[in-house]
Image 1 (spheres, rainbow, N blue to C red):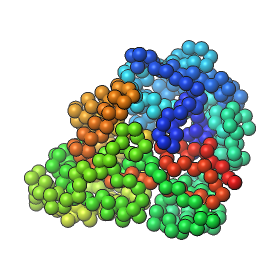
Image 2 (cartoon, one colour; image 1 turned 60 degrees about the horizontal axis):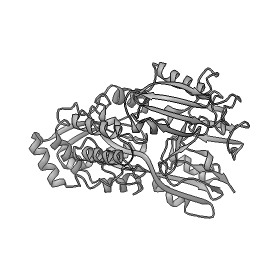
Image 3 (cartoon, rainbow, N blue to C red; image 1 turned 60 degrees about the vertical axis):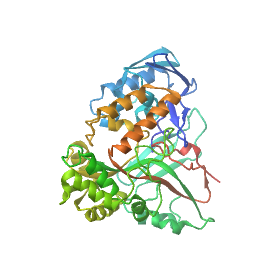
Image 4 (tube, rainbow, N blue to C red; image 1 turned 30 degrees about the vertical axis):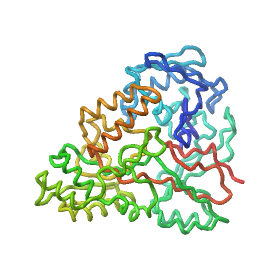
Length: 441
């Protein structure tokens, strides 16, 4: 909601996954790839009227580096940054501890949001951004309302007010859309309801891809899951095409590694370790589990995860694997599974863009600790251009072959709008529901 709309970044990701200028008009990299110099747009200003200058950017980097309560994801993304300094009023240099291609993409996301340093308090509800909209009000668990920023430095917002409403029941959300109470469903959570919106005189349906890899995560600290043949057996025991058809009405893209179609290094690896229930049983037997295996599957209570867990448990039962499924509310899942690692298997969508680096961190909740993969990823991250793309592709292939996880499918970008709404991009390549392209005719 806030990314790109309220808080802007130095650069942004477009619907095709390409980096584009935003607060920075241009940027360059030093020959040793350790310093990025950003040339700020001199017209850019915060809602307060104060300029988005190099001092403001430095203040934001310093604030993040001194924040001891950063999420694990943001902390990992920031770890490569050694510091920032002003070069001139509209030039800022950010230094890295090592070359990193991925860092630039991270700066186009939540990590790179630039807030007005003069504003204190909760940035989620403060008027501290430079975007076309400003925060208006928040009804916890129900809605967030943004209002037009009359002092916006760029192309003015097209709407005076935008109300984001939250629904826990996807059927209730669909009913509101059908009744005309909503203009847009930003992420259809009941794909089997698509037929309800088939009237083109009333609705437009947009279908594309997202960064949301639905991952059946494996805890590599488990004795059984630490064995490659077990991971191969589990993967081959699951008919992922049938799963996507059953769980998400056939909507989405089958993937076989931690990469989605808008990534420049994407290649279709969904055929790696294909469905083969007979071979799955043989692999499990070779690994020492011919007489059975029991695993705990703990998933957050969201539709795709719960339905996928039930499907997986049924198919693994046929392979001699007993799966005990437990549904948790998301806060409990985050605490017990993500933070404490109390699970064998789990299912969740990883929606951050270009998140291959998570498998290079053995402390991440999968506890995947492969020295070879870590070396592959480090070499890819240190490379540039076509070399980086080729090396990232090699890293995705290694993950697929090593069955570091079981990739079920990439969540689709299913957006429903009134027929009068235009400008919704086909793909969702960033974490933002970007209002800047949307209009009403």
